[in-house]
Image (cartoon, rainbow over all chains, first blue to last red; front, side, top):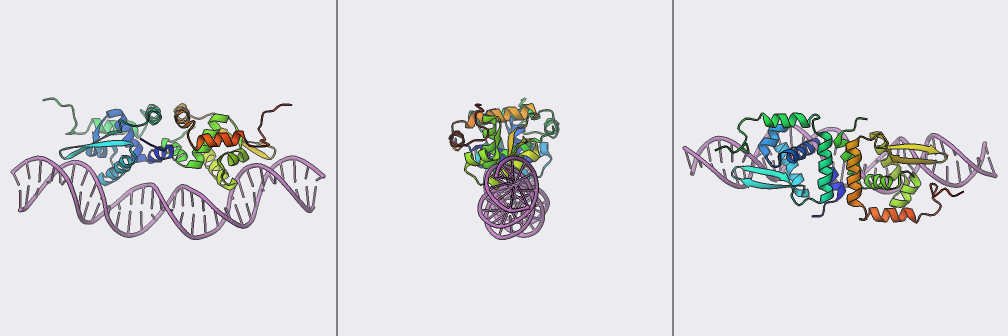
Length: 117
Length: 117
DNA sequence: GACATATATACCGAATGCCATATATTTATA
DNA sequence: TATAAATATATGGCATTCGGTATATATGTC
């Protein structure tokens, strides 16, 4: 994967995109409706920014029935992954990232919720 | 210092700004004419981008006679410093950063050249 | 003072990014 | 087939960013 540094930083320079990436770093995998709920943004808004992240190769997606699950791309270059991890460590617990995580935790009927049979 | 993550990433999303920051991380302190020479860009171009970095608090400047020296801001938050260091480690040796460093090394009459009496 | 060097800012048109809204697509179910 | 839910894309307008060029400012020297 060939990810130009300026492209990575441009991707992270938008609030919605950064908040989605942080959520994905924390949670591993989330569907669009979960990201929409967590950030309190409109669905097309979130979807468009996820598409940008996907086109850059920063996230990967997977469809399961009605839902499309996004995750940080597993083939991300090491340096980019380290930049993301340092960012996560730096912003964790601060608004709006903390409230996003709280919103997600209290979301009712999450599709990817703990699979208890 | 209060540096919003998206502001840091926006600053690094431009080629000229990222190249300048990388050079400053490597060299510690450089004047505008050195950054101009290293990147092969026009002087107003470099100066304007340095001004943006300064307004964000990412770099600090110091005037010495005719020259203005820039350095990565010493009061940068830890997480931001770590992001910069990981970026430097990731891009070092790759174009255009490697050629910038080479251009700087071969620049004649550098004002901040080794101070041998 | 006149002049040269280094740096900063102003101006302008082109390009890009952003958001909100509306609509299309995909999948599942009745 | 009809309908609903989840997601994606299209459209239009506004704001920001960008790079190039011209010009202004600051400092030092003669």
